[in-house]
Image (tube, rainbow, N blue to C red; front, side):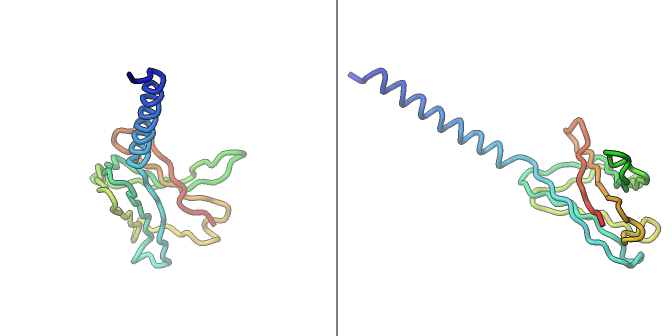
Length: 141
């Protein structure tokens, strides 16, 4: 005959291990996005904002905004905004891949110390399936 206390202990240990495995699966498969930049001083080549999907899951960027912010009291308030053209929407970023936003020619912006002294650049991504946009810090002098 099996001891009921030993059987209950075995069930508790097994269910705890399975719960930890499930939590690890959910945590490791979450959406992870990294945003960086490659700024060049030539308007012909332009500045690049690099969006990397580090996770396995693809996602769709429904809309994006590049915010140039300055400090007002305790908040960073946008004083200028760059937005995509009317046909640049629903950009699919596959798992473990990169999407580059290029700002060249008329879209070029100066990022030097004189232009950005004490200011910051943020990228606001509207991702399909999210209720609120996600804001990423890109650059500060």
